[in-house]
Length: 287
Image (tube, rainbow, N blue to C red; front, top):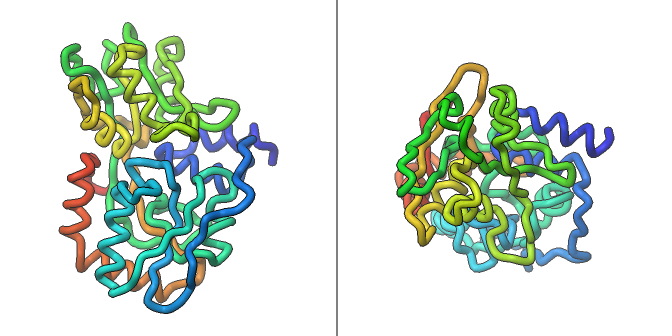
């Protein structure tokens, strides 16, 4: 299947930007040149929790281990009495193939709960797309059916080289709002810190009136904006999936580790929720 065809199909799937990116990572070349070598965990000895992660992907992870997935990984390592080691690799083309499925690490801390290329745990959070606007604008928009969107500029994330819209971008187009949309690459300039933050910065800088972003990105970067921003979880509407569950991923067939991670998620449910809250991740009941 050609990249353009695959990206077009993926732009219609019901998944958050991170989920679509992971699907593209697994299935489609993005025209991105990966480093020639990965920075991998030093050992596969017992007593070590080996995690694959992106070194520049806040609020999820970064090399300084400042993301909420990093915090949950530390909690998991402590729970298991293990030392935490990372394999750092940008979440672009070949991420899962090169890291987890190549055996250089054992866990990816955040994957869509519906992903079929790895074995997933029970979901440990469910989030939603959210609207972000300047607080001084007093918009307080929380629905893609809000009539005011017809006169506003709406920022959304786009995927890959052909700029396929992230869901629910096509829902906005279906409502006649194509001319109101301004796209910002979810991949961004990887040489700069926090590439996905550009979309939220665009709201603060009045480049767009409102952004519709995946909840963890919206909550985290809005909370760190110098300009006060308003974050509103998008209200569900018929036939437009806006809420998605996330899990940990292990290699297919590693049922023992999957069960151990599920036990951890039950035993440390409150602590995991506290970490998510501290990163301003909007959570909702599982759909």
